[in-house]
Every structure is written in structure tokens, then in C-alpha cells.
Length: 291
Image (cartoon, rainbow, N blue to C red; front, side):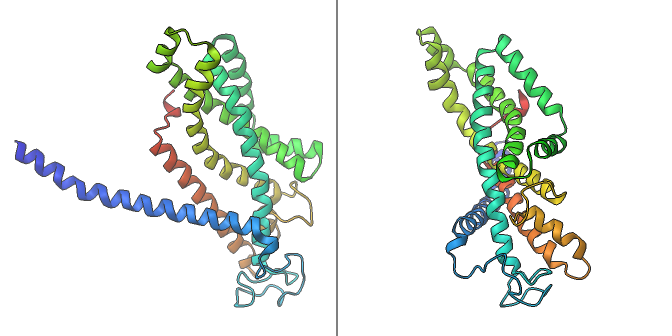
């Protein structure tokens, strides 16, 4: 019997190891891609090989990818590689603050609700549930329409969308850790609620929120891209991935590269964000769905 057990265990190990290696390779590829995209976006004004994204006739209009124009050119002959980099710069500059504020505000609300419970939890949960029940894109569209199309207003709109979802996750994690033994022992030893909340519960919730930040970044980029695609995001001449796709949707037959290449960059970035976020959730054993 022991020989059989040994055989089974030994035979299963070669299957687990390659799977873990594939996960590690995919994780590092995703991290590398995100570093490349973020570095290109941040350093775009100082990178000499990136042309002015607004400069017309950098090449023949609607020319496909070439050595001189890596991603081709658009209807006005503007370099699509430069426009993709600068579009990512603005899309990320909207997503970054939106997720950061959402993590802070939503995280605090969720942790407070999960730790104290009772009427505080009831009040926060009621507001969060109402906010999550609203159609996200319609709500963002309403905010931008009322406030006007600008970088600040679009950032406000997508930030409001992130807070309820992050608050729910933070509440679930706070509930999970507030019931753990180390919190109970600290409470029995006379620790006051500020220590219990900020020294025992909050530090254990932060890793989960850091993991969720990657997933939230992808959602915010999609939300901003959707607003741009229907023409209600940051106005011209600002460039985002969404308005590049909107400009190229009518030229798919004659110049498909305008939309497809930038769409591919956006797709790979979203896939990388989701994979890194999912992998961190798995490794940190975040189980918000079970609470």
C-alpha cells in the first residue's frame, strides 16, 4: 500500500512542477510587459525614437507598419506608434489616480464596516449595494455629461465606480481577519480598538487590496476606453487608447492597423494586469468570494 502511495505522489510531482513553471513564466512576461508599457508612457516626452503624436504626414496616410513607422500611420499620416504610447500615457494617468483613491477611500470604508459591524456595516453596505446596482457605464456617462469632458471629470467618474467594489472586498477581508485568533487574543489582553483596527486587521487587508489594484486598473482602463469610444471622454486633441479605437473603427476595411494594433496593445495590457492580479490573489490566498 505504501508503495502505491509513493508511486502516486511521485508520479504527480512532474505534473505540478511544469504547471508552476508555466505560471512563473507567464507572470514574469506579464510583469515585464507592464513595466515596458508604464516606462514608455512615463518617459514618452524624453524618448527620442517616439515622434510627435500630433505631427501630420510622418508618413503616407494610412500606411501599414513599416521600418519608419512601426505601427503604421493614421488618416492624417500621424505615427501610430507614437499615438499608441501617448494614448497609453493618458489612459494610465486616469486609471492610476482613480484606483489609488478608490483603494484608500473604499479600503477605509470597507475595513471600518467589516470591523465594527452593526449599524456602521449596515449603512456602508447599503450605500455600496445601491452603487453596485447602478449600471457602471451609464453612471459614468451621466457624470461626464453633467460635469463636462475633461481629464479631471473623467477621473472623478471612474474613481466613483471603483470605490464601491473595493469597499466590498475590503469589508470581506476585514470580516475574515477580525474573527482570527490573534485579534481575539489582543482584545482579551486589553488592546483598544485603534490598535486592533490599525495594527492587527488593516495590515492583513492591505495585501489583498494591493492585489485587487491590478484588476481594478484593467476595469478602469476599459471604462475610460468605453467612454472614449462613444466620444464622451477627454476631448480632442488629447489621445487615449479609446479614442484611437474610435477613430479607427470606420477604417477597418482600408486601414485595419489603426484600430487593431492599438487594440492589441490595450488587450495585452489588460491581460497582463488581470493575470498579475489573479496570481497575487492566488498566492496571497485572498478569499473574498467565500465571505
